[in-house]
Every structure is written in structure tokens, then in C-alpha cells.
Length: 578
Image (cartoon, rainbow, N blue to C red; front, side, top):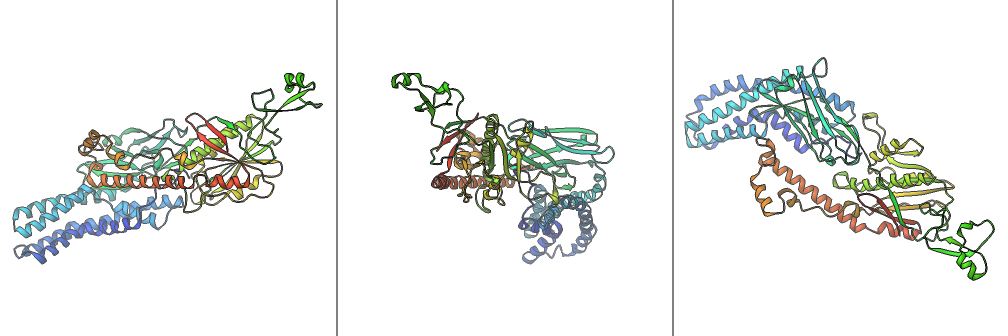
């Protein structure tokens, strides 16, 4: 559903090497470096120390490795139970959980480890004792901090499991939990009696759904041992039903060498309702069908529309008598509107959310922007029809509500006859609307029976299926290219800026606060690559939309169906007949 799913697990080509290196490679790396260096350099002067080095490794390194294995079992149990209850525990999720809890060493810690190994090689190559001393100090600091972190984390899990019971609390919520698109929303973390070891900070991280454009990252110190509250504002609140979390919690030492992953179900839900816009019809479409157009209604009073004239018949509305023409012709003539009288009272309003599997819009590529425009028109035209006295039934294939876990039903066709006081149900359906590949229009059009007119709100990339004989359909088409708006600025300009001063400042400024790990080269490269991929994906979607523009309209024109084009403005939706 729109922005609702949890963050996907890391791919196996990331987790499997990470598990192998984090689990054993960290402890074997110095031995591997020493063995390889011994093959190329003179090491006779240090061979006599191998007994002491072996004893040190047995006493220090292997106990740390065993404690890490024990801590891994204790720390993963809670995560495995959480994802199993939600029905999302698979092989990839299992590997991702193990990788998270084994990933103790940070980028700064690995820098210290590799520096120590490099100094080992330099000491053997140059036969300088100073390099050997520096290497020993670097490795000693690294393994001392790593060993202490692994040791503390094993016993810290027991204390952290008590969070949520008694006075110890760690909660997450969004305020308010239900809003209209564009309104302000804050996420709130409450900490009370949370155990934080001496020399460590508690870090809360969550990428959040991409449409919210907000990455949660908070750092808490010793104040969490008492009671504290942290608030952060979401940068965007577009229409959708979102599941935030579960957030990842880390204990990081003050040197930034290691961090401990702990488990807690820090998740929250946010429902953003679509903003209702009035719908206006600028002109009726040209069609050879003789059935009435449900969207074009006659006026009860004389209007300024174009008129035809005919002789007066008994029972005609005397308010439509054209007195001037009648005086000239010597007979009574009445004005007749070109639009037909509407007789249909039952209207089925269908939201077309179908897209072929493997083709078309995707949430991360801008497809949700197209769906936003469809939902605005869908709900807006429903309100207009109800105000005109029609009985309207909303039909859409929608994903289930959040929180269903393994028992949640698949995407199903939902119907809602609009009644007084059910405005909230309409908005709820609009917030859950998302692209799906299970139900095409043929299944939803089954709701259109004798004496019922169907209106389909669509932004299709492919031609619609054939209709059953006798079905009367009015199409409201949104051009996907128009819904996506103007092309995005080039990804380089989005990162560095477009002016020479902005580019110059990007070279020297830090994107995050001083001391943050995100300022390092690798995180900045990773964010740059992610931005480039997103820009290329949206560009491809826009090109596909332009290439298919008009194809669906032409297919409908051959059938002779009535077709309106949806034009969106910041304040309203316009329907233009084609």
C-alpha cells in the first residue's frame, strides 16, 4: 500500500559477506595480515613473540568471539518473534536481522582496525619498532573497545527486555495520527528509565517511507535514564496510509568505534487523508451515444447555454418560451437545451488502480503522485454527484488496513454506497488507494447493472478491457505525464546546487552536523548514488508516460465512449470533454 510497507531487508549480497566478516573476519584479520606479511618480509626478529601473541589472542580475542555468539542468540530472539508475528519473517529478513546484530564495528572502528593492520605491514617492511608499537596500540584500543561492547551488549539485552514493563518505557507515536494531506505531523519518542551504560549513547534510526522525505535519527544520552521526550517534524505528509518502523536502536560508544543493536518494536502508524477539491466541468464531450451523460445536468432555470428551438407542446415548461421568436413566427416556441435530460439516478464510481505486473508506476518512481490526482477527482466527483441528488456507490480495489500481519487479506474489491455521515469512510478509502496488479476493471465493472451509469476515474498506461454489451461508461482520464509535473532538476544540481557559490560551498560544507558519521566519504557517496538512481527512475517513468500519452484516449474514442480529460490546479479539478 502507499508507503505502508516496512523497509525491505538488505539483499543477500550485502548480508552474507557482512555476516562472514563481522562474525569471524574482524578477529582473524590481524592473523591473516601477519601471515601474508611473513611471506614477503623478514620476520625472524618477531618470530620469538608468536607464543605471547597466541596467548594474548586466546585470552582476549576468542572469549570475545564466544560472548558475541551468545549475545547474538539473545538479541535476535525478540526481532525474530516480532517479524514472525507480522508474517514477514523470511530468509532475507532472517539474514538481515543476524547481520544487524553482528554489525558491531562502525566505519570509524574499521578505519582504526585497518590502520593497525597497515602499521603491522609497515613495521615488518621497514623493521621499525615504532611502527610496531603504534600498530599494537591501535589494535589494542580497537579490541579493548570492541570486547567491552560485546560483553556489555550480552548482558544489556537482559536489562533492555524489561523496557515496557514497570517504570521503564520507550514509546513512539505520531501526533496527530490522522491528518489531511499537507498538515503538520510530529513523531514523538518518549524515554523513561531506559538503561544506558556508562560511555555510551543511544541512537534511534529509521529511514521511514520515502514519500515522507524524513529520515529519523535521534541521539540520547544519560537523560534517558530518567525521563525525556524527543520530537521531530515530518517534512512531507502526502496522501497515504503509512507504517513507520520498526526503528533500529543502537548503543554507540563515545569514541564511535562500536555500536550495539537492540530490539524493540518501535513502530507507529500514520493515516494521511486526501484533501478534497471541488470539481468543475468546463464542457461536455462529443459522443454519438444516445444515452444521457451523467455529468452534464440540465438547469431548472433558463440559462446562457446554446439553445435550439421547437414549437410549444402541452406540458412544456412555460419558463422556456422564447417570446421574441414566438411574436415573429406567430406561434409559441420554446428553448431546448442541447444537453439531454438526465434520467439515471444510480451511479457507480470506479477508481482504476490496476497496472500490469512488472510495468507502469511504482511508489518510489512517482506513481503515487499519479494516484493522488486520481483520488482527488474520484472523491470530488462523488461529492458533486451526491449534491445533485444521485445515489453514488464508490468501487475500488484496495489493500487491507495496516496491522493485519500474516492474516491480512490480499487486495480486494471494496464498495461503499455513500450515505449521509459517512464522509470519513470515503476519505479512508482514498488514503489506502494504491496501484495493484490483481483486479482489472472487468471485475470492478461487474457492479454496473441495468439502469446504472458507470464512471471510471483512470490514469492507465495500457488500453482498458472490453466492456460487456449494454454497459454505459463515462471515462475521466488523467494524463500520467501531466500528473508527474515538470521534469525534476538534474540529480547533480539537486546535490550540489546550480550556482557557482552553491557548488563551491558543497565542496567544503558538511551535509550533517559536525561529528556525524554521515559526513564521511562513503555515506555521502551512497546517498549520491541513491539520488542518481531515483532521478533516472523518475525520468524513465516520465518518458514512458509521454510515449503512451493519448493511446488510451484513442482506444476509447474508437468505442465511442464519453471521455473527459482531468486537469488539476492547486485549488480545484477541471473536467474537459474530448
